[in-house]
Length: 124
Image 1 (spheres, rainbow, N blue to C red):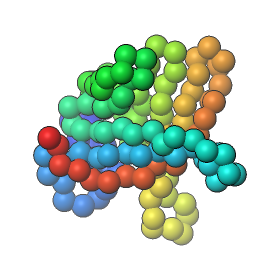
Image 2 (cartoon, one colour):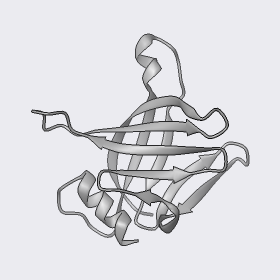
Image 3 (tube, rainbow, N blue to C red):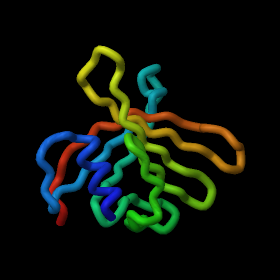
């Protein structure tokens, strides 16, 4: 659990409260070329990573201890793929960008890349 809290503090170096989380809205980078994709919505809290499972038509949570967490990234692992989120700051820039990449285990390659908008939210 401490690693998730540390990740939130690293992603946004301001004062954080225990009752805050992050809403992530991720848009496929191919959208910039005119293709239409539905944005993907996630929620990251100290207790876990929330996502909507379309196959079962319900919200699910991956507990924080099952996430792979690094200094400026975290990975949510699913049976057939993984979603890797990373904070990027380009040299000479101060703006942080959050990206997400989807890695397919069956195809053994990255199959999609996203740019994510991040909004702090109070945990319900």
